[in-house]
Image 1 (cartoon, rainbow, N blue to C red):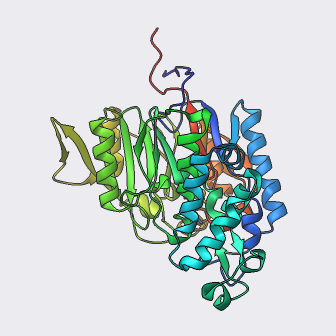
Image 2: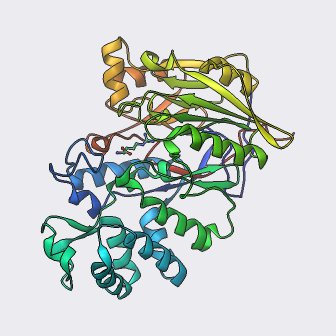
Image 3: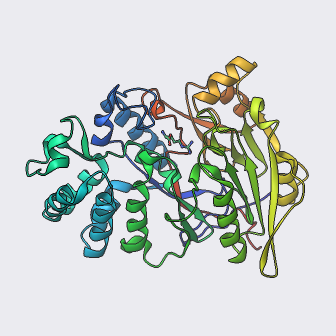
Length: 408
Ligand SMILES: NC(=[NH2+])NCCC[C@H](N)C(=O)O
């Protein structure tokens, strides 16, 4: 049996090593900005009941803490980070880089943000700023804006901390988000990793100015093996860049590029499969059965791309050095599977091998997980789920025990 090596450094080399520290974002005022007019643009499928979403999220965090996981909140880290001038400057300039502003409004905003206490600045950077909240607004842009417009757009998808940064080994990849509604998120995560003392000096293996790459597409299949989905969010160029950086830096020996359909239902690889044990995944058969993978490796000083794609499950097992991946299928019949996939039935968060957090509503998938020997910690997600994300994408592991067998 594989045992885990306990670690004291921030690192992760799998999706299932015992989870020690995680970064979450408790939904806040940015969710109150969602209306039927803007929810599509802001990538939510509805208008959540914010108080209930917070209760659900608190229960999620409570479940993690009950299992010994340290929970760090993005909002706290950001507020602490913003007490430094450099971080403040970076985050403010990122908010002001919106070409809609024009010079006059940008100057007004710069002086408004410059006067805010770190607590208030963090709130504005996360929840945005409505036209009517900027009392000092002036100039043509300001005058012609609709009173309902945002001078700074809110970031309701901060909730999905998995997407804006990923641990790969002891490095961090700050990603490059594809959708306009999310792009500014990485200015905040980037500032946290660069300037917060908790993360001082963490080596970076990717950055927000690079080709599109989102954390929901990145799966650490096991030590040395990284699968990266490419579809609606991560581009093939993003996979190639990450592979180059990860392989040349010795953080992995194989990267598997996994094409997925360019659909909302399958926006990230973690919507169709996630790991629940060292050698087991939960996956959506309607899609995942057809998945292929192209293996990338490093030879000498260049990327070597396998000439032929292989079925994903076979390529994954080969790269991981195991006979086969055990597969737990989403749902029951194809319709239940489709419903439970949509409700993030595959988007489970492993706290350790064979121990996973899942939305309670995915009854059939959870039953199948239990039949396969996976303990399921059920959480409510009726409101949280309206952003189309589950326990995995609402969590960014900072530290997991290594999945490598510990030396005996
Ligand atoms: N890794 C994930 N599955 N993330 C879900 C992100 C959902 C978010 N509303 C978006 O569209 O970006």
